[in-house]
Length: 113
Image 1 (spheres, rainbow, N blue to C red):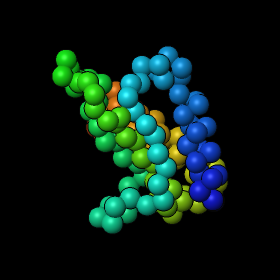
Image 2 (cartoon, rainbow, N blue to C red):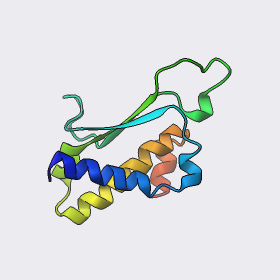
Image 3 (cartoon, one colour):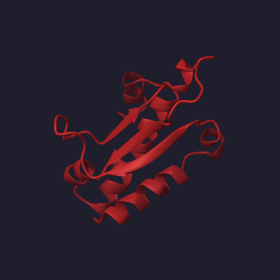
Image 4 (spheres, rainbow, N blue to C red):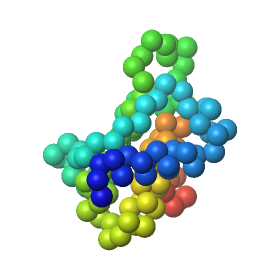
């Protein structure tokens, strides 16, 4: 799958997020990268920033939070295009949930682990 095709899958996954949740997202950008850092080559996605639940009066003038979805690990773990579509959607939801302050344990309980 080309990078452009994968980026389109990420875009489609974002489009499926309910509008009422998308409106609540604040100061966050989503990126697609081919590979994560060399120390974690199995990482499918990464949220970097301050979750909405941790922001206080001090939160102003900061760079956007960053959600990165990694193409290489996703393609390596999936056997079909349908698997890639499903895994990409799960990963996008998982990382957005971190933006809302939901931790990995709860995401695993919800099936987004």
